Structure formats: C-alpha cells, structure tokens
Image 1 (cartoon, rainbow, N blue to C red):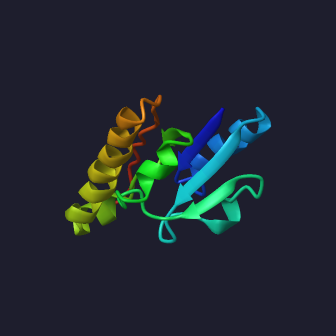
Image 2: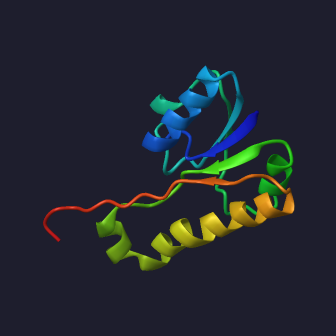
Length: 120
C-alpha cells in the first residue's frame, strides 16, 4: 500500500505514519510549514511541504497514493479569534482531499479530533 498522510508531522498523523512504515507501506507525508512539527517527521517517509487546499497540486499526488486525512485545527481560542481560518482548515481542507479521493477512486481515511481548553 502507498499512503498519503496529511498532517503527518502532527501528533496523530505522525503516529499513523509510523504504523504504516512498520507495516511495510510506502508513505508520503503532506504538511504545511505552519501546522506540523518537523521533529515528528519520520525520515523513512517521503515529505512534501504544501497546504492541502492547493488544488492544483493535490490531484497528482492522490493518483499515486491512498489518502488518509488527519489535518485539523483544534485550538478553540484560535477558532473563536478567527472563525474563517478555522472553517478553512476544518471544512475546506477536508473537502479538497475528499473530492480528489473520489476523483481518483481511492479509499479515504479520515480522523477527526475534538479538544476542550480550560478557562473559556
């Protein structure tokens, strides 16, 4: 299997990358320079730095790999301060890879997250 992992340098995505590599799968990590943590990048995975909202780049990649989408914005304070950014990350950045998976007739793995912060 060849898998694309979005947010592959984030907490959940980096664990998914390790699980795929340990299973002998080829992995392509997609992450943007603003969200991920470079220290979490598994050096056995191929890495492409881009935002998944870049519609002109994503189709080519989805033709080669099976997508798994882990990229979400979970900071509630950020959501309240900038709801447009929050909706772009959590809605638009999910729709783009989902549409490309449908176009490429690929299975689509998705993991959503919810978090709560104290003091709101």
